[in-house]
Length: 87
Image (tube, rainbow, N blue to C red; front, side):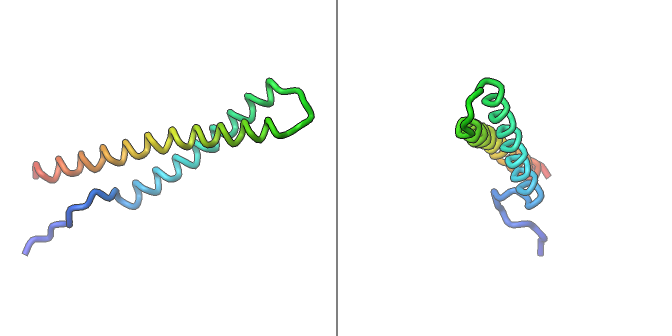
């Protein structure tokens, strides 16, 4: 009887947690950058442009970070698959 793990493309729980946290941190950084860019350029009394800069920056940065995280998780799965075939 062999003790083989079942084939799965699902990354490890630790890898998924790290990817999720990286998306949150990327979104936070994008929100800060978006807010500050609008804050530097806008002199009006309304806070709507500041909020839009914050939201757009957060969405853009979190989306970009999520794309990179997915690519890294897929590459890690492929490396594991190649390593399993070699051993």
